[in-house]
Length: 335
Image (cartoon, rainbow, N blue to C red; front, side, top):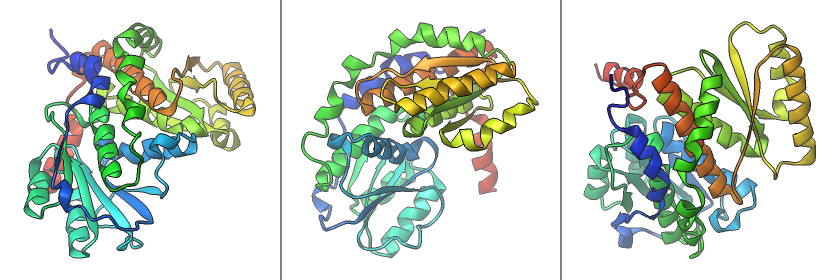
């Protein structure tokens, strides 16, 4: 019986190549360059990950992809109270049907703020065209949003460069990613790890700086494998969460993402924490983050967690592509 009915396997193999896909920038000449003091990304789920990515670039000191003004995320309806004329509002919805993002777009237009966006089309794309809003079209609308991160990053870089918020070398910083991160080369290691997670709930830990990578793993495990998964970061979890493992009330597996660039004290915390958890008979796994810079680490984490969650989905007899519960939620909200 075929489980992967939508051929997610092929999508994973080709995912990093999205970075260099041709992207159409509609209404680019209508964008308004003015002094902005912040960028607000309005999105939900996989369409809101760009804020995490750019925060990661900034905290890691990766200058080619670090705007000189803060990037914030709004994951709800309307706009935050502190949004003003110095805010560049970016509405991102892969499908173009996300009601929270449509609400944010309406509010931004009502307040006459500068708006740009990213989508495949849908209602949001129609509104962008109707109101001559600058927007970048994602070329493929038949893959899950969580697998469109290459498209989204390339589109975001294109928009921020157009507004003068990233330098002209920004795209060059990601153009070589398909040569550096090859998803097919990661499948076997991820498949071996999936076998160790048999009927266990994964909990992913990483350094604070690599928190976005742990969160990315959690999202892929939720949406592809359809299982609970959780994440946290060190050193914060050492001050509270680790005490909760004293009474292990379920079947969990702990995964530490280790980075050669982590601070020495963080490396020691990971080792000591792992020893303490093992003394409580907790299964612990170490996975070393691969990549010479933040974009490489992000797409390594995305590709590895795609394969991990994909093989867990097959193990559980689950089609990894549909997110039935999410779609049912959207359906009921419209009733």
